[in-house]
Picture: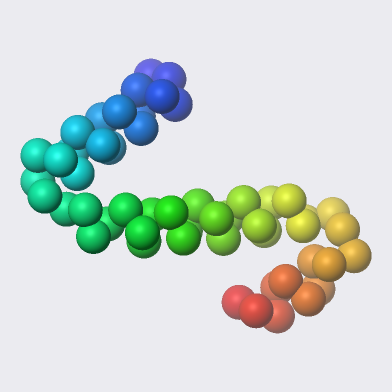
Length: 52
């Protein structure tokens, strides 16, 4: 299953079940995960990890 298919299924789930309140939660979790992955090998890592 491709990543776009997963996003499509998730969007369908949100529309059918009227769970649009989940969208900001998922977006924040994805952004936090991306922040951790991108700063993993940099000098900013110790400062980022103190936030969590």
